[in-house]
Image (cartoon, rainbow, N blue to C red; front, side, top):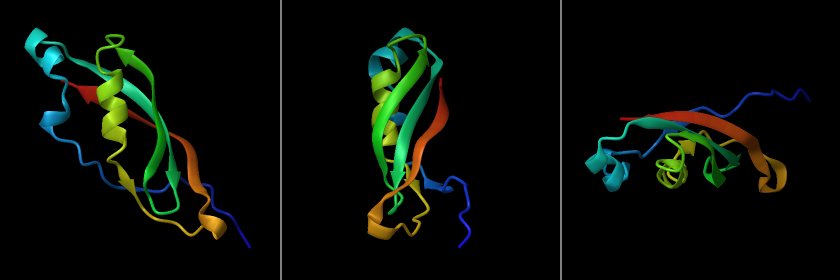
Amino acid sequence: MRLHRRAPAIRRTGVSSTDYPMEAARMGFEGWTRVEFDVDSAGRTRQQRALISYPPFVFSDAASAMAKDFVYESSYRPGGDTACAGARRTSPSG
């Protein structure tokens, strides 16, 4: 059996303009956040966490919440194990 080391492809993000932090929009902030998460065998994200944001602390919570809605390709894993650990995505905000 040969194992392929590739991350599952993203199917949809579920992100919309309503995910943008209202306070940041009122103040005219733009920025980005790098989030990290695990992908389970069904393609759902787990353990979402913001690694770094610019400006700091402005978009971290919103980006982590958005990552909960990401859906990736499902992949067979015996016992339903994690399909991909520590996947990262940088999301621009603005």
